[in-house]
Length: 233
Image (tube, rainbow, N blue to C red; front, side, top):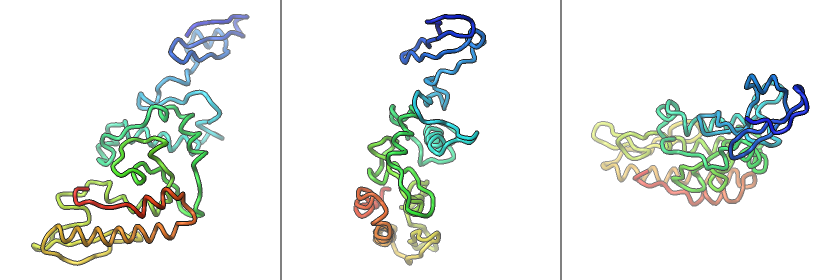
């Protein structure tokens, strides 16, 4: 910090000596004690910062919804223990502009919508399958029911293709729907079992898309209808 304007000990302006040159009025006592916060300090996982703007991190002493979701995204991408617990987030990153909370919060308010029930989730890889970057181009709000359609895919699936298990020398197939597992039968090969899963799961996703057709953005609806599972997923 550097004092750039001084009236008296109770009225002075300081400037942080970094690329952002943030300025704030303060007192000499606070300056000397180092009690002034720089909104561009990377205080969240050493990458995220609050920035300057209208969006608050707290309201009535409680974290705002924008800040809570931003914090969770940063943590799941950059906190080592979180990545160990959730392998699906390995190699995930946040775009540079969203490392600034203010920019993320503005996108949040401009893109949020409500379907009348359930939580809304920020999804990064339905619009662009396999995407690992949280950014405004890749992310979209989705109802919880839609987000849950892809939970098993994002988690570690084991040694067999997604939707496939082995039991008594047979390959069994199943898919998740309405918070339960729907069995699809037994097959001689894992490829046959996977194809049974693929057909049933993709049909189920289309049915859910139709359920929400008039409540979700068209690009989300189109992405759900076009979504395809591969045996390598």
